[in-house]
Image 1 (cartoon, each protein chain N blue to C red):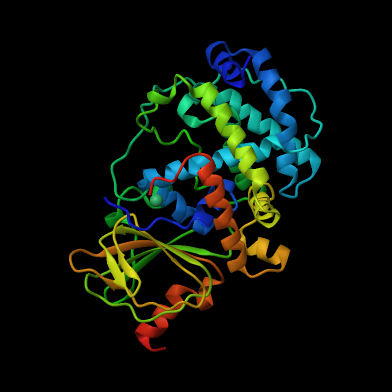
Image 2: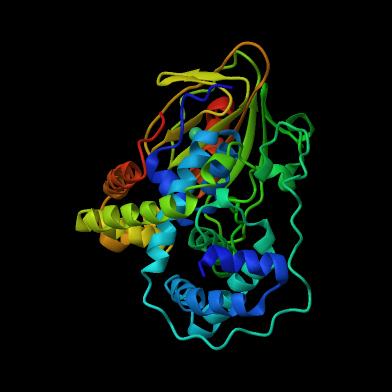
Length: 212
Length: 180
Ligand SMILES: [Zn+2]
């Protein structure tokens, strides 16, 4: 897998800072699960966080509480539990390990989606979308920042050609009409900021596809 | 005794003295860090204690490839803050999730190089133009997303993003060129 499009620097920094809106952070974490380069970048910016933490003017704390009777966790010798699957590790708790076993809902002919639930107060949405090969999605605008990560197959738009692991960032107001590449279904994970129900990506898409 | 040695003592012997020493060093700054997300002192203290309890429990999982002890504690505190204060899912895992290869090569000079690196990062942070340092601090310390920073400073989101991007590139070169 050769990743051509990585997330923008400002998103990597915010990811390390722990300041990203939840839905966008899910896409970032999924990309990093697939991308050693960005894991390394994150590790560098964790150090920036550490340096800033050290500079905090200290607050008074009480004495260290009594330690729990339980002994610290024993080292596992690096043998981590690895499950096979094509769903990025961070999302497996939500949808399981395999893309083909996700509960897909049909949106229009050749287009399916699955919404991942976020915390109650989240103002963004996180969705898997699956598009049949060769299908072109109509022009659709974006109501807030949007982050897309390709998980399977590929798609093209006026800006480039995106394959597995690639991240596409769309800013507010930009329109594009992606075409799923021939071959298998194209599956992406998409985080959209803003009130998704009315202005979100899928709402616009449905409108365009069904003419409502 | 270095922080790393203290952590090793906790891992090897459940050494309560080593733990107390780490608690005294990090408890107060982690509490301050929690308060900057906008919580009261009592909650911040509980979260500082929980952060340190995680350090105790996970001491044996810590290894050289996770960066300095401070970096590891920062990541624990960052994730606790997302989970406990913002009540959001923490998607970005701690550095111990991925077992990276080639970690052995950094072992020998690690202590020296990580101190040098820390100094370089500190210098780079201090050398940032005021408006760039501001957005970095608002991100890391106040935990504000781009949009919230834009509202706070009454600037367009695009301006915030480009300031963070510039800061990123300067900070990044302090620890070697990005391998793109
Ligand atoms: Zn990447």
